[in-house]
Length: 244
Image 1 (cartoon, one colour):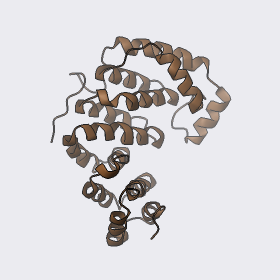
Image 2: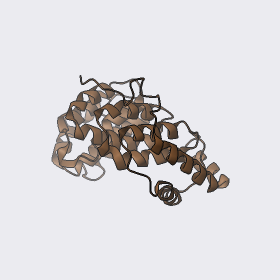
Image 3: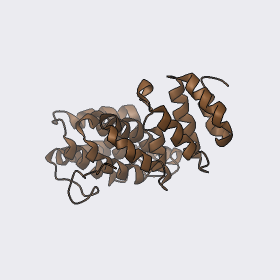
Image 4: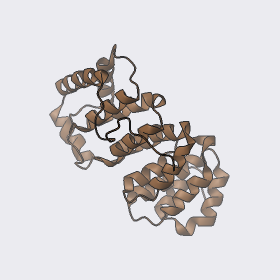
């Protein structure tokens, strides 16, 4: 298994020193807090099952504010990305986590395989589908695509006891299309096919449905062969666009 190095030598949750992160976080907390909408925040918190508090910033508003925050800021390197993400994750309101996810999506190409432990920390800390799914498909997926040796790390994640880590392994190829490692995808689905949690069963169906856009016959053949091992929810999701 490839040995992953942290972006810091002292552990993945220690925030690296970063002047860029200092600037971004000072601007971010000031700008977001000034636009907070408590009434909308309560509704957003309820919709997300009370996982975290919210500031009440709708996505278009939040992203417009983010552009203001980032105006004139140099492109971050890997250490800056880690500092921004980890510091955002220590703030309670979910919009700061969304800012971090957007930052990582934009700059994942500047990160090496050694960044994966940082993303694992984000996935497993205050986890819910709203951050986990974007980290899985855009950030973890990007890291694995850039360094195929990380496939062995995904093999470890799919058997992890943390359902959000396992869900990330299922979804990391979501955007790969013809680059999908179908054998690995189907093996992951089978490995977690008996999982009792909705979020795993839904993810199995989702990743199969997405791959069916590229190779519907392969998905049909897999379902015909293994349907008895998959939850009905997973099968329904997988067949949504290709039929029985």
